[in-house]
Length: 126
Image 1 (spheres, rainbow, N blue to C red):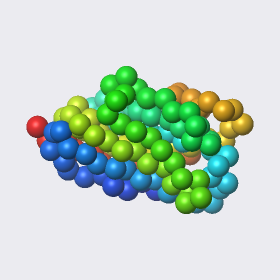
Image 2: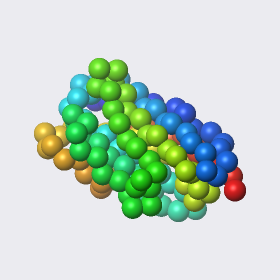
Image 3: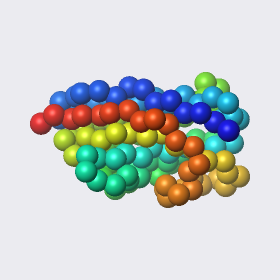
């Protein structure tokens, strides 16, 4: 099974950018679809973005489409979330997640994901 560790969170002003990173270990990384989810303060966890095993298919939540980009480097066991034009409502704990699949398209449903990182805090000030 894979272990996931996120990094790159922090405090940023509205309109700014951040890049989150997630490194996987202990598994065959290219067998996993990868996703980013977030949990805003006082709210439930929500889908942000997902990417297929080969990195060829990406899906985004409507609230981040056009501002966030998910990518992966299977040689380095890494997945990234580039966040631009950040808004205060993007403030949340961001989680990296993974599940083994043979499908060519990834899922935006959190229940599909078996492995989760510990999360990294992103705070966007107005």
